[in-house]
Amino acid sequence: MFKAKRLDAAPLPYLLVSQICDYKGVDVTNEHHETVLPGHKVGDTSLRQMGFIKQGLSYIHPEDAIGGQDNADDATDIPMPDPTHVAGPSQVNEEYSLESLSRQMTEMARL
Image (cartoon, rainbow, N blue to C red):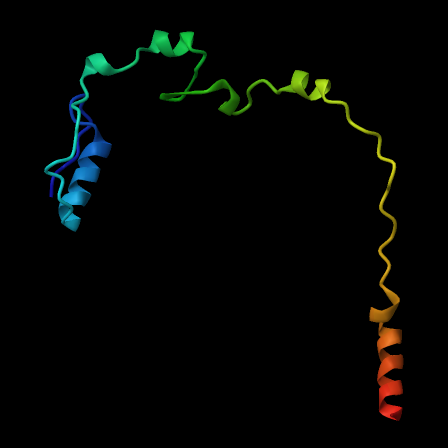
């Protein structure tokens, strides 16, 4: 079995997928592939200029950030109606109550 190393020219996911394809017998001779070189990667400054936030070792979109800014401004623009119908206590329909069912059973027994 091959050992996977994290290198710029051979990232782990491609190595893992190619080994799975070989193991399962998938023919990959005519598949298109592109070698990833360090020059193809997007730099940290470019990601920051696009508005991404660094969290740990990766960059995420600001809307996906944990503990990020809440969208309070968006929520204030939407008018919320006042609650007019408040749910009352739960009432059992008469034909499904225990008293009604027992009454129906006694009536059926008399027939």
